[in-house]
Image (cartoon, rainbow, N blue to C red; front, top):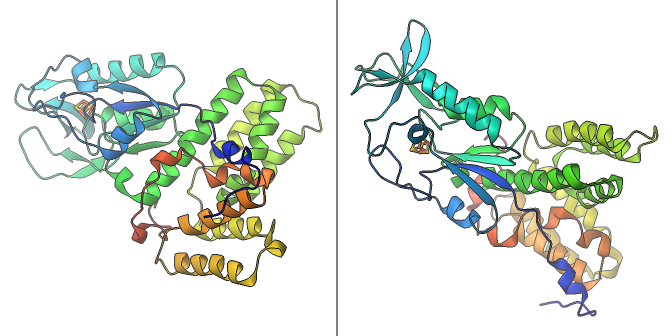
Length: 339
Ligand code: SF4
């Protein structure tokens, strides 16, 4: 293991994260509020409890359906979607719409959402639409009532269901976006020009991995040649920040960023050390490992050579280390997961 020559330098490695505010379906790890009185176990929600401020909510309980209750479903009624409870014959569409508006108008600043997979209320996609209250066999798929309203109101925020978050690459993108947006929220609400410059500088490598074109546009905004007031500037910056994270980083871009970082100390490394790094990159390209070994190799050199600029780059720790896991390898190289 490699240690820095300056013992205090290593402490700088501990990044401080802004705690994201995340709305979560209450039946995920928070309450036995499903129609049958169950609670759903979710490793990612359980893990995140330490790192985020969760705002748990159960839309069906909020509209007075109680626990336990007969299940609800979305049906097609004269070409329109309705939310109904077949056992009671109740149509709760309007109650649900009222709840969605009331809740989303009053929830305040949020940085992301984790919602229950395929629920007619919370689901964000793949929710079954039935031909009627009694007939089985879905005729189409849609988003749930609450999930759909969340997608409409917050098109740029990280919004996922707990099912998709079991995929390592989707989870990595979600967490990176979540913690970056939470940090940005703080800059926007409490910050100044100096904070925005710091935010942009520390995220440069991360933005480079996500979208170089948007990185340049954000750089031009931060340069502020027209001397615009902070409020105007930050609103412009926000548009490009959201656009930067609209798609996950391509794996080739992450490799480019690491190779760029290697340039900071390549003339101080032996050929064997460089070979070791490129060997990890090769294994990553071949799908034999995640990007972690290559990142950790660079991180060890950042500490060894006391490279303060790279040390502060969020690319090397975009979210708290405690949320890292040994990821399944097969999902890392797929760029088709968002299609
Ligand atoms: S999916 Fe949503 S509405 Fe259904 S039990 Fe969970 S929190 Fe409640």
